Length: 119
Image (cartoon, rainbow, N blue to C red):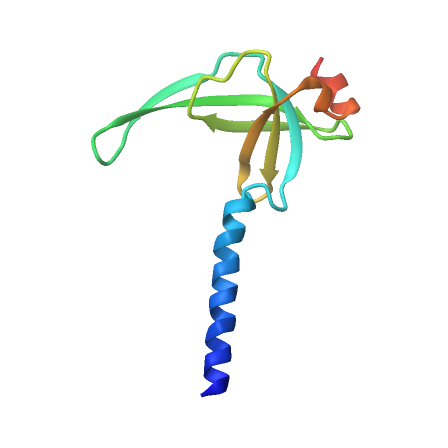
């Protein structure tokens, strides 16, 4: 009985820890390569109808991205809004999934070799 109780407590701690970690860890960025892009063009805009009948708009971007060593990779991704022109993004890319996440960053936060390629 004591072993069962201890096992149950351990399982609850593990599940609770995993749920809590999901709030603080962005798993879309975990293990991803980092690239930097500059929004230099207008997106291709598409409207889709969801299964519930509502419509949503996607903004499709295809831009060159550069890693911290200045190596280029084509970054193709969708956004839920029209991104600000001349904004700099930090892109998280995984081999099996492509772009998994992004966030706007300041130009000063971009590694030197990547920043040189973006200008």
